[in-house]
Length: 209
Image 1: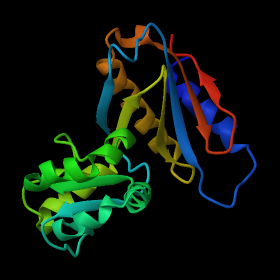
Image 2: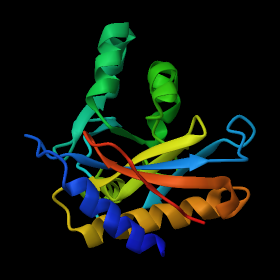
Image 3: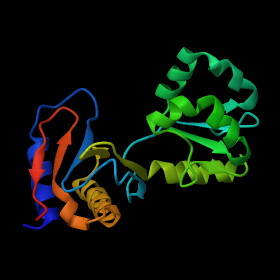
């Protein structure tokens, strides 16, 4: 059976689960094989056709911006307080930065943002100017981008919300799957199987070979 047909059946199955009081996230789990995480670090951004979730974004800028929550250079010193720094990192899903502030951002915030995988990166997260157009364009890009980091032989990524149409969720999943296959050293051989679940449901297995 083709992957998209299996995904349709999996979504039908998952949707039979008990209704929750919140919008559940659709999680895709990709189980890897013959893949050494330490030898081949995987850290990629994948652009999906449909926004998977609203992301809370903050920016490190020289001056306050009305388009995004801002941490200005003047505010940096108060984050030498470990607790404040941790709270900041937990509050936002994504951080962007003005290019010229990056060395300072790395010094002040790097030790916490780095391990959390939230450091502004040249791939997606650095602007030359903090003007309205640059910020809006980047926010749009971030909202339809998913970051995939392999820390273990199993990758979990949120590909949508339960109130999205099945077709949209499937399009997002196939985009992630195809891009992941391209990024893996041995293509499909590195993928054992994939699983699909909502936040509170059991995963449904999908065979890819």
